[in-house]
Image 1: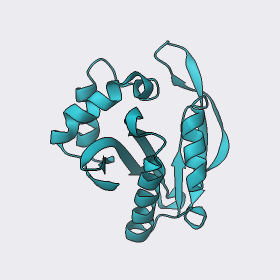
Image 2 (image 1 turned 60 degrees about the vertical axis):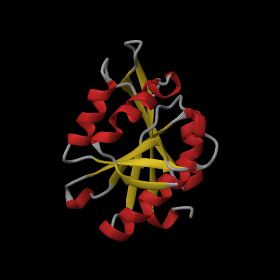
Image 3 (image 1 turned 120 degrees about the vertical axis):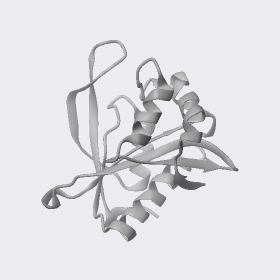
Image 4 (image 1 turned 180 degrees about the horizontal axis):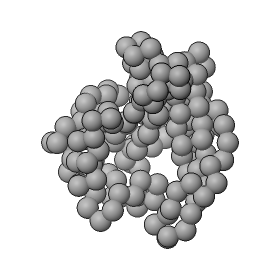
Length: 162
C-alpha cells in the first residue's frame, strides 16, 4: 500500500469507487461524483491522497488541519473500494498518513467522524488507536433526508498502533 497526492487523472476512478453503493452510503457527494472529487482536489485546505495497492488506485484518504494553534489537530477521512476491504489497507493508510503528519507537521492529535451506524469503519479506526469521544447527535443528513448520528473519535500520536 502506498499513498501519493491524488491528481485530476484519478478523478474517474475515485468517482467510480464512490459510486459503489457500499461507499456511497457513507460518502455521498451529489449527482456528479466526478465533480465532487474534483472539488475536493481543488480545495486548498484539503489534502487528498490516492491509496494504491498492487499498482492500482483503490481509494483515497484526506486530511485537513485546524488552523487555530490553540486547538491544533488534523481531521482524517478515508474511503476504499469494497473489493479490497478486510485486507488491512485502511489501517495501513491511516497509520502511514498519521505518521507523516506527526513527523513532517508535528501533529499530536487526530480526529475522525464516521457515521455512528458504520460499525466496520469504527472497528477499523479503533485498531489503529482511535478512541470514541462522543456521539454527534443528528450530525449528518442522510440520502434519505433524515438526520443521522456520527461518532467523534480521536487519536493521540502516542496512541498510534504501529
